[in-house]
Image (cartoon, rainbow, N blue to C red; front, side, top):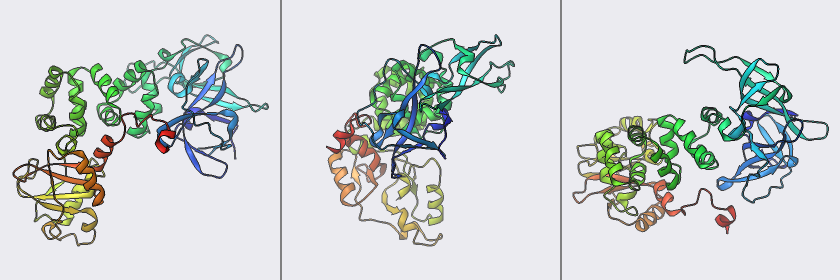
Length: 416
């Protein structure tokens, strides 16, 4: 059943479908326009379609909102979204904004708001879900909540300064890092930096790995050295090395001195290599086992939450020591092959010795042809003594093959 009243924060991430039931994208935000009198009216939705492209869907083309999904007429203007001066984004700009109750009972902040469809089919803001300031100094205390009609409040501030970064982060809490990075790119630069600084270290590390180079540098530049070191410690070493290669040398050394010694050593090693070589692309955290390790032991390492999917596809077998740079590289055991053998089987009996490792100075053009020719997701990198020093994964290669603006390029260009 189609709803005629819906709270906007619950729409974030909802699927958008055409009349035939085919998914065309997901809701990112709802836009409203202020009027001289009465509550603001909803003008449309900001929708992300394929290729992370953001487009505007007028509210007149929304035929149904129900059970976490939005149905449209199917007619979507593929021109990139541009916000007009009179429009305000509810999630990005209004949630968290301070208002004052006209009954004289004080101030509150907007935690959510409902839009409702009237008899004239127009959607307007009908109700606000508000939270009073907390009355206790306890970090766990929260202010009382209440509902109010738009006509019962007056706004204390308009514009970005009226919304707390914490409120925006809470709204986007369920987004994956890539989607959160995309959402940050939609914000004005100052707002993006404010929100990034409020993210916890692990979340910020994940998001930085998904952002373009210029935005990475802007954010790291705003962090003090200690926080920057904590965040870079949590990033994949190859991503951290790429980022630090673009910082002033003095800043880089100051941050490296504050980082975990082992992580810093990995990054220093990676920074020695050219960006478009195996050494510049590789990660230094593959799964490494001894030849007499069992399938069960290898599977236990693969199951770890922190292991990226591309790295979980293979286990690399070497002589001791078993951390890069390892002992002599012996071969690789693919995850799919391990599934065909009993848990007690030794990895030494399952080695793929035909997969030739590459040297650190191997150019990216050779690497992507090798990955494509042999349908691989990871390629071992060895030094002159045939010791494993890292692994190039297919996602690292893709990042370098795609144009710099792939996150924001027009869909027409992608398919043209």
